[in-house]
Image (cartoon, rainbow, N blue to C red; front, side, top):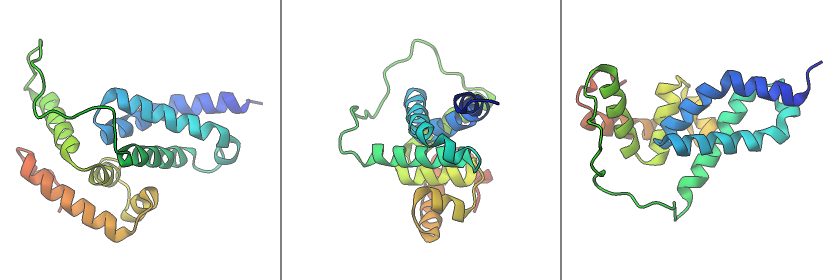
Length: 166
């Protein structure tokens, strides 16, 4: 019989990459994404016996959303945003999917945190309005309005917004 810790390790190995991708899309920063996921997993481990037979991935995602929300509610985030980035020693790659990925990431980063969370859950993780509302602890109407505002902003930001949902 496997121990709870072994099951938790297997869960992290199996679901960790998906969870990390979601965290990265929420934060827009790979290091903050790792911190967010690590925090969510650390908070989920004490509850593992209870959640392991239910939907542990959904539980960890919910914890991740709550932690992320508490981070952006804080007044001081430890960093000050700048209008332009410093020069890069390596020229940016403007080809194919890499360019599109960067463009989408930058556009997502410009969205307010709540709108970014809605877009990530609704369109990148393919969650329903109800699931998204439950995960963000808000109403379905709030999810719809935040999604509409975010998509309107993204349509104005992205170079080829034809593929965005209506």
